[in-house]
Length: 398
Image 1: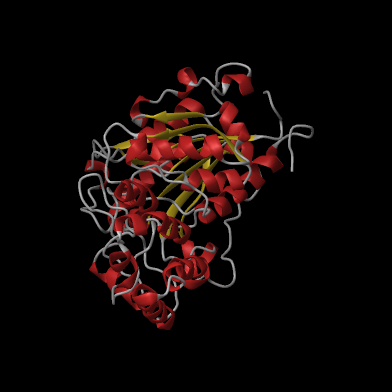
Image 2: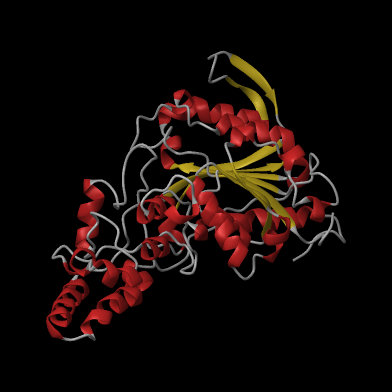
């Protein structure tokens, strides 16, 4: 390979706005391709990789595809990675194939149609595993996939990776599979255990190619001590939003101070799960009725998303965004911080795309549907340790 034998390479499908990509990047992986079907999320990926310090490898060597993953052919259509690889990507070259495949087929908030849902992309993910034969595989989904009703489906996924007999989900007939991987587990991790101020359990499957794993034991990340709360995460930015108007004085300043006092009197805690909604349903609010009630206890109005601080005066939206008795609404940036994104990560809205949605709706949906970066980082670091330990002397790196 090219740039460095120490580099761990990855390709991610269903990349969204970059939650998993950020976490894996922080864990030491360098992306060769990010594939995302949503135009706004793909624009977010391009915007941040083009601008952020530390993403120099991706700027030079990573292709960002706005396309259906069913039409993605990594062995033939990668362009930028050729400069790093010295040629086309070949089977067995890749270190990690990762993906947060769509959750609606298994979500408790949906109909849980599983294999019968047209959005089920597990089969495509497994086809890509066969095509690429990466050293490791990481698949993320909602915890609903661990429900008893999906046991046969999970058994099929494991058999496809590991080998064995399982019922084909399409025919219902038992089939025998040859597998090259060891499935290290399909574990539910709670985001709040990894520094995310939000209750967001995610089911994560990790598989390592058998010749790579050998006698090495994959170790799942352990929970970090001390939960991060909403106030710890966004308290400073929330106070700054109020103080902008307090400092103006007058009637507006009095209203702002009263609203700030109400916010600071509310209890602190961990947020409920952010909900992004789907392309067909849902707008820019923070979730169903139960979640809205939980947000209210934390002093947050969950009925919508606030304008950015620079837009509030332009739109004269301080009453809507900040002063309501229910509490202030979150900005997109604050919601992203609660999801575990770096505060500087920018989310593309209506200006970067051909079919615009209102900016906040397009941006917030990306946040609400994301995989928290700190969780991805923790799992990625566990995978990276195995991959580095498996490299022959002279090839591995720290």
